[in-house]
Length: 184
Image (cartoon, rainbow, N blue to C red; front, side):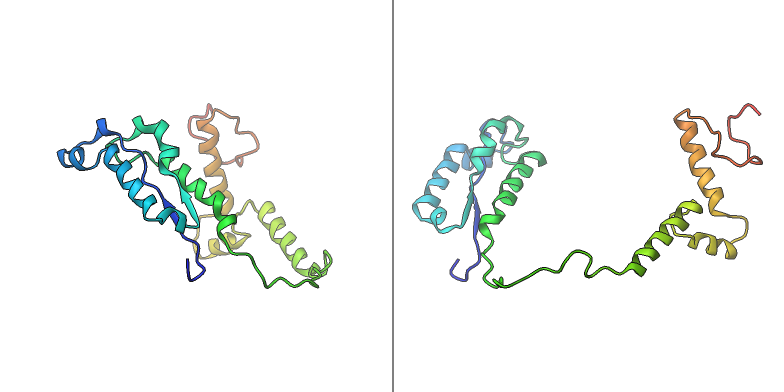
């Protein structure tokens, strides 16, 4: 903290004494032992020296039964602790002192480039017209590999999808390709 970096401390979580699975843990790692350790941390001034303290027992004491080995909890419990830390980030990050008082942002559209916008619209148009997520480049690749066209891949993908979902196939397939399981 002397260097200006925020320090975060996580107070050890609640111990489920009944779920401790080894004799060594039952002898040396009970909730009573952990409470003594938490008191030692507080007496040494560790908690007051930190920028932010996550109180482990506060978010685990009601979920004590979910501790599968007496010490560790399921991921969603740790996610709660991570969310508490994420919510505290705005308190932990230092204030910026390099903001200029006279900063004036540019007007909307000032940095716009109409030619790049037109190019993006052309890419979207090519992708939609050719049923090609690769903006027409798969048609270029089909020149090198004979017998495979991107529209065939489109039909193959959507035929399987429609068959699984029992959806109609009208308008999906070309006329010369019968579907698997079709009446014709």
